[in-house]
Amino acid sequence: MLVLLDHPVPTSVELLLSGTPVLRRPALGSRPGALRGRALARDRPDVLLTRSMPTAAETAAWGAATGDRPLLVVLLDRTAGPDGARGSATRAHRPNGRRLPGTGTAGPRLRVTACPSAGAAEPPADLYARALATAERRFLAERMGPVLAGHLGTARPEAASVVLVGAGVVNLLTGLRLLRDGHRVSFYDSGPDPRSDAPWTSFGCSRGGGDARMFTLTEADGYFASPGGGPPPFAQPVKDHGWGLADLARLGPAEVSWTEDNARVPSWLARSFTEDVLRYNLASDRLWRELRHDAPELFHGVGLRKGILRIYSDQDVLEAHVARQRSLTERHFEILPADRISARHPALAAAHRAGAFVGGFEVDGFTVQVHRFLGAVADAAERAGAVFHWGRPVDGLTPGEGGAPDGISCRDGETVRADHYVLSPGAYGEALLRGTASAGLIHGMVGVWLTLPDAGRRLRNSLKITRSGHTAADANVTVTEGPDGRPFLTVGSGYGWTGADPDNLDPTQLDALYAAVDDTASSFFPDAFDAARRSGLLERSRRHCVRPWTASSLPVFETVRTAGGGLLLITGGHNTGGFAQAPVTAEAVAAALHGESHPMHFDYHPNRLRMFYGQKNARLPE
Image (cartoon, rainbow, N blue to C red; front, side, top):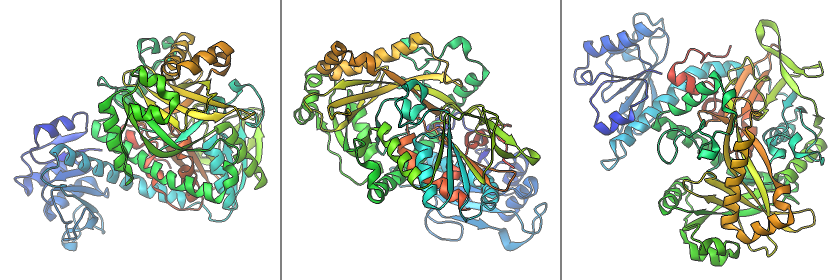
């Protein structure tokens, strides 16, 4: 995406533009007409960011140089669109209704989006950040809209056969949603049945990690800058307070490219991406509530516990998180000092005395024991007619006429065909995704788990702990129960990047990650930690899972047309939010198979970041 900025901007905005593909021509806006028209024709930008509407002659010159491509204008500091309508509505505009040179019979397609200032108190950098985000989203929609419409137009609204590859929590809830629509659903998963007692190392992320998952409105947050400034320390070893858990000698060009993609996302685009993700958390909140109402059997016996307590080691971070939470919901959040939290939750009394946290606040949300939840969803899917093929690895896509996918290839040599396919392989799908736009986008990020006893049932709510500057900076503590009803605390935390290979684990760095989570557990629950160590529970409960991460911090939703006229959909890369966004992902899949558009099809398009930078490998799907 190339933006032409035609007017002077304050220094704060100049800093904002760093790393952004913007052509700055500050003299053009004060001299609109032939000069700006020549610049538009010469530079052929995708977007004009301006304070004054282009004239018919300028638009003609721009349109003649760019052919049939839509001409996008973001108009700043206006309270009305080009036709006088107030607000930031988007309008199509054809000057004077005349045919313009080089544009065909329809004339140039001018799309104007007004981006009014929020008022004199709004910092200029905030206004331009909104304007650039508007331009990027509009550019994406204009480029991808016709392609996605063409793909969705091939879907038949009637019930069809659907093969889902991967049976983690995202695809299981997706399959259950498709069964409600009348589709014939079958699953293929390389691991054993999650309802079995197979070793935890034989499962994927959903069943292989700790028996706990959490939903709040801020799951799947963006990961772009470390507290000290700069990008996250992916290649810095965990033992040196970094996120690098891989054997660094085995990293190659794919990992270098991935980390560079993350590092160069400008601050305004990072914020825009994060806002998109959090918006889907809001949608998932509604869908989770509906699911609990419509299918209560899924939540019986799975350790459902409502309400989350967030606690912090740093007052400034606490206040910033309260402000963000308030931006997402109308609910009032009271900052609770550490002494009040300790009185309400005696399990945290020792941590309070040691000064481990300064305060916190309570938010809406819930936790479940995800292993039990997977079993409940699988049971419900089987009752509705789903067929499961456990222990059946899928190695790739079978190409059909013109190279379009025409089935999935199982490792045992069988080719499986259906009307539609939904792939959600977690961090383990690189071979399966080969040839798609999603290939290479998803890397592995290890999180580790341990369990402590809570004999006195002294923790009322599951927790989110934020320890600023700590190796295990963010930890979830979930109140759980064993098979006999005994209470436990399941602690999960850590960032351990593996690169493209989820099995590239350096044992030394993995031990360092375990040690960091041990420190969190012992700092906040010293008595329970000592009891777990003495009884052997601590060692027995240690496990890790590999989460699917993307450099952009945007999940992936890819739509591909199959050789048979159906759809192949790829979902994943949810970072730390696969469970949280599972219901809304299921809705987006169901919409696609019904031939309907869903905002996620655009927002999570795998080429979004590539298209922004104009990379050559940002090909449009056929």
